[in-house]
Length: 171
Image (tube, rainbow, N blue to C red; front, top):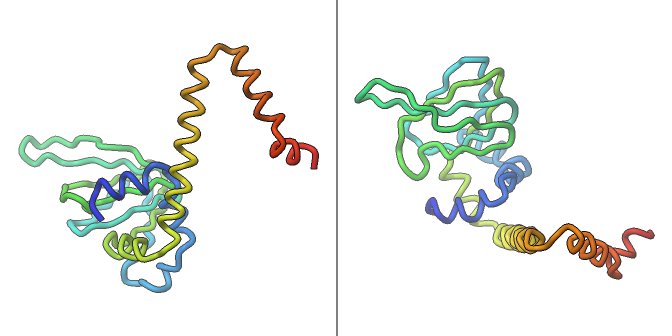
């Protein structure tokens, strides 16, 4: 899988990959491709050049890159709970991770995870359903922005009064 495929499919709904990682049995099947790391406040973690997927279980993690030419550190991102970070999966970089407070991480071998995900037949269906739901929400929100508040209220009342919704409300 290339970067665009993974970004387009997995990261459209941020918790999708985190949910798959939580529900999988990779921890038992691939013990040598999985690690839990606990960092205390200010502690650094350098993961080397191999591709990893970092799942933040708890806390906040600062991602920075060091420019060796001019001896400067640049903050690239701050990751929080249930974020997934692709470390050196698509292109090699000299990233360093620093804990902001206490942080618990699950670190997976990226190649193993992406190969395993691509084998499951449910995965494309899950992604398609998720993408359809996101697109419906997008169109609904963008349509609502073109209307004034009275029209929005009338449309919401109309949607709630449809038969499907009525059964849910009265049962």
